[in-house]
Length: 312
Image (cartoon, rainbow, N blue to C red):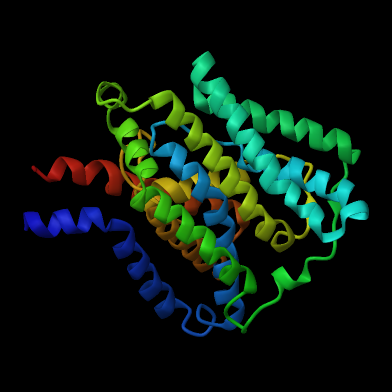
């Protein structure tokens, strides 16, 4: 029994995902597995995962990075400004902006000791203000990236294929390199990591830098997929949902465990929940309420309750 509980705890999100797939298949046998709905699940999965992959690296150190929405907003309006001169190459502003944002945020965080939540939220709000000012307060559409938004089949968007190398790179860095090992060590015990000779300040800056870079590279795919417009409104859902994917997947906000592969599972599970509830044609407020309860319950059971049930 104890072994089963340990397996269940360690793979909780997989059991939840399988249970949801069975449940929605029974309730909506035709609609849930339709090409339209599967494509929508993949698109939602891409949005959540490409926003969350980079910040997952920061979360494993015990810090938090909320700059992904700000990079999306400001990078979009800069792409709009540069597109008439640079054409399709204008979208490369995203990885450059992401890299610069991550590096500067990391340096400020380790030197000024500002809580990462407050610091990165402030950066996002500042980018929001810059975006609204540069765009004149209106969303600005950029066209010319249709090769990213087309579909290889009724089920699989091209963007998903393009995103696979990004996902693989994030997993490799965290699971197959010294960098990942050190980031986990910092999240588990920062003082112990320093005593063992790890330059924790350096690797914290590197975590934020990688987060910004992965966000920027991911936004090359996401920007046209999300409409190709620079948004001018900071919405709570865009800020919170990637964090839900991180925690739901099994990466605790205190750091030390989890990782990108867990975030991908969390993103897929949350996408299935959203699309499954969406098929019920409930009022949006009720859907949001149900989503909140489901996610809260899953996070509580997966990260708190079962810990007290297992004695190691």
